[in-house]
Image 1 (tube, helix red, strand yellow):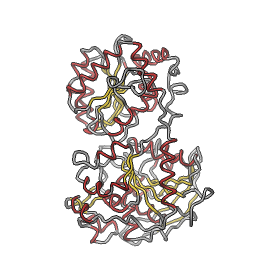
Image 2 (image 1 turned 180 degrees about the horizontal axis):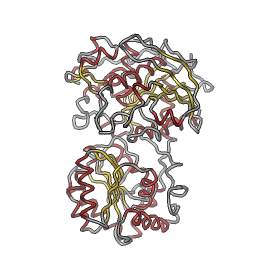
Image 3 (image 1 turned 90 degrees about the vertical axis):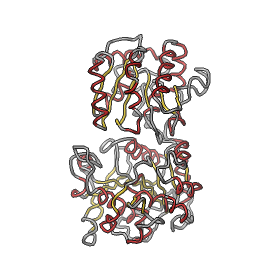
Length: 507
């Protein structure tokens, strides 16, 4: 059936996280704010997520849509629950306590170890999404587009190809190519897929089963979360061994920059702040800085810049560079606050730095939503020295809060931050500080430039106002997603028609 202006695309949005109820990073934020924005724009979008305990507790009023019993030895029985967020976004929740109600995060136990049955847990999420998009759909609502996200949902494309009759066209977003969903080859049997899937033209990757390859091979459209990242992952440096396959799918691969929730992240209305402000009253930002320094035990100094990190403490984020130059950074002079959690060696080192530099460095392990907002408002500059960064959200929060970012020029960081040395501060575009070479020396030189600019109030305020004037809302991304959905919804399902044999062998 042709799609008319009165017949918006019907999209099932499949995600493993949904902020604020289950969130480990940017994926959870995007999985809520993008569908909410699409829904507000008139797209018939519904989100399918696993029934984690926080979600089941938050949405006590649900409607049981159906019960599903699988053949023995594949997946456990489950129910699909229907509810909606406070904005009216429809949610389908997979009620399967055996898989999803357990202590820890979406992927790991309380000790930080991956759940041993993650292949089955996210295979089930993929299968239910594929089922809803197939002739076996148990729901009264039928999507014509299935939009899956990251490896946790990628196997839906394999199920639609090998197990189910597709009634949808498919979109897949790569939020982070480094996480590929790799499992032993003999896992295939437990997922109910045929043995011939595990070969170079299928889901085999260096002897393992790759969830991600299913989507890279067979999705009708591949998206990434920034234009720069879409180009980067087609190179050996950033392609994680899949660059050949991605190059072959290049004509179907598009980078669309993520947006942010500009209602929640707005310094003029942010309820977490001591003092609200906007670009016309930047003086009020100093009130938030003093309050933050007091809360974290930092010396109450206005004459030195306060750098901030809010991040997963992982290898990707490049924070080992910051550790390497910590003494030199303190000698600038400056202050530093770190909020995050992740790899124990990084956690331990940042705690040790705070102990060694009392009044100058503060480290808070874990995540605190209120404190994150207060840091964005109270800090002077924000650090993101990432090895790679598919999109990044915190640099956009920082720009909105008048907190110029110091970033490495990769992925979405390069798409959103323009270095002050490239154009005169205050002229169109300059909003932060960028370095290209991934090295401690490059980061140190760039932080020193930021400190020097901080002591030039007119230049600094020009950078702040330039960042605060930018629009990082979802409107542009919604328009592009809606155009892709509409194009696909008007085409008979059947999967991507590209010959991928050569590229798949390279992968």
